[in-house]
Length: 308
Image 1 (spheres, one colour):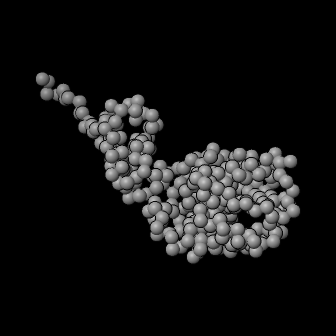
Image 2: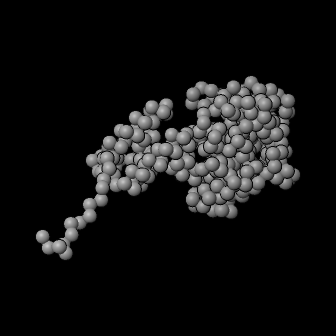
């Protein structure tokens, strides 16, 4: 053999995609995760930068060492209970794909249901001119309302500058005209960030409503990785809701309404809060798809019927 001729260097390969998928799913199941196969597919497809369908279509492909290392890093983060959305870096919300990380609460399916109620209530009156989104966080509610034609403009408030920074990133991703969404930092009292004469057709919110004492009992993915200020709201979980109910009438247009999420066991307490407030009528506490109290809908008194 000619001494100048060298055999090509063969890069070592690891297990196949199918084998890795099976192994990761088993590991996640042993760790007590509820949907191990789905999460394994998402983690591996994210780490490899391929569609989930490729894991089946190309199940026999062998992983290179750097690919195996990327999968191991992603799986390790999930085993530390970091939310899957943070590992992937995005979360789907209605028609949007939003940035997701520690700066803001991960948008939940229940919040999508809240927007279904807003759309149903507006009916043929959509789009309205102006909406106030209290606790905008990632910007999910505001951007969904804008992209779905429910409103022309939104003012989004949040106590967290970091959350507002994430919302601005999501505004860019959404391709919504930036002049249609104004993002403002607000104090815990909320209303000093809104000028006294400002009026909105709707006020919408997914406020903090977890009792402070219940925070340690939440899944580790929540209490260790999501911002406390977006979750906890005092001993009863009602501190922010009280402020919203008290201040909303002064900032709603005639015919306007207040929509917000509540805890599953807070329906009765929220009704009591509204009973002390004379500016709303036709108040309803409505369930989520699981049948739990989840949404408060409060039209301003003497509001005209919508969609008629």
